[in-house]
Amino acid sequence: MEETFGSLARRAAREASSRPLYVRLAEQLERQLLVTGAAALPSARSLAAASGINRATVTAAYRELARRRLIELKVGRPGRQQRRAAVSETAGEPPRGALDLARYAPDRELLPAGEVFTWLGLGGAEGEGVTQYGSAEGYLPLRRWLSERLGQLGLRVKPWEIVLTSGVQHGLDLLLRAFTRAGDTVAVEDPTYPGLPPLLAAHHLRPVGVPTVHAPADPQEVCRTVRNQGARVVVITPTLHNPTGLVMDLAARERLLAGLAGAEALLVEEFFDPDLVGEGKVPPPMGALSRQVVTVGSFSKSLFPGLRVGWLTGPSRVVEAVLAVKRATDLSGSSFLEAAAWTLCQRGVLESQLERLRRVAIDRRELVLAGLQGAPPGVRWTRPAGGFSLLVALPEGVSSRAVAARAARAGVWVLPGPAMSVSGRDDVLRIAYAAVGGAELRRAVNGVVEALGERRSALPLV
Image (spheres, rainbow, N blue to C red):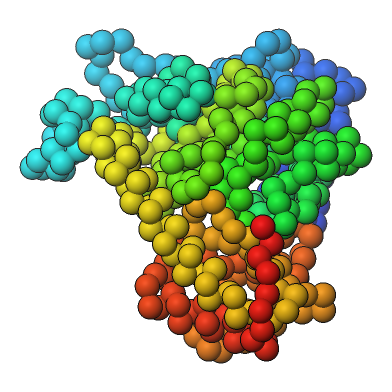
């Protein structure tokens, strides 16, 4: 039987594919497991020896099988899955007082000298603590702060129900690793933020877009897409959708939740802090309306992108599955960066920054909207409630790529539709005004209007 698994492993290695070897190996082994059961599966060491594949690759394949709930990982060899998706293969922490020659991490003597960590507001022991590998869950003081902050918005979660990530993209990546397989369908708003299409492609998923131009995604259309396409995951941004800048109202959020109540699809909300909304009433986050929603957020838009700290929360089964993937792929996040984020929040920097961003965003929006009044007929655009982008919809037959190319020749960069669309739509473009303000922004918008064509009156989308 071991030779059978060895031949399957060699077949996976010979397969001509750009997909990672461990994924191909897991798929080959999965077919055999359906026949023999997990008890027949050899240890990673034995299979590596029988197939000539690196043991680390075999172990990664076994972890993938554990993620799919087919086996349970134990020290020494895989076993039959019972309750948990995976069991840690580490031997745990040494007892107090033991001389630790197992861990490759620095002691106090090897840490940077001087008061390196005092700016974080940390004491000596705390500063030393953030230099080490942290927990997969993330820096506990920050999770406590997030628990309080989200609770104020109606999203009541405990610190242990929050997983810290390296941003929204990382949170979504962990989620897709845990709950999707190559070929699964994911429903998204179309257009969406430009980082999502390549992430879905990297996971070999099939994205289906729900048109989002004149208004936020229609709940009825989202639910119809899930039913008809069998979507495993739905990703939406109900507050300050990127690129439109629109906000889904409370009634639409409730209709969406009601329509997906009986579906198996996982509803994922990309969270924008409601304090970034400059006008209009902001409904509670989707996660505050249903505990079945997975909420993914970060400090990138509210503080600055270089602070690669985000978070994920949702049902316990989701948190546990994401933690299992996180432990297997990156051990833990950066305790140093997470402590820095916590310090900024504790000192009130986030609160003052949100207020300033909200004010500046509205001023810049008005400047952009005024400039677009000179756009050609048939060109329309959204009126964002906050944030730093809006969507321009082009008349039939006008290519966003051509407009972007003409604008680029004038020294102005805008994002054409195909760069943010899962369907490749070429009839929209995004104007973002986070990187440019004042007179330069006015000149930039005039350059876009020139690239659009003849200057005549036009109407906003909303």
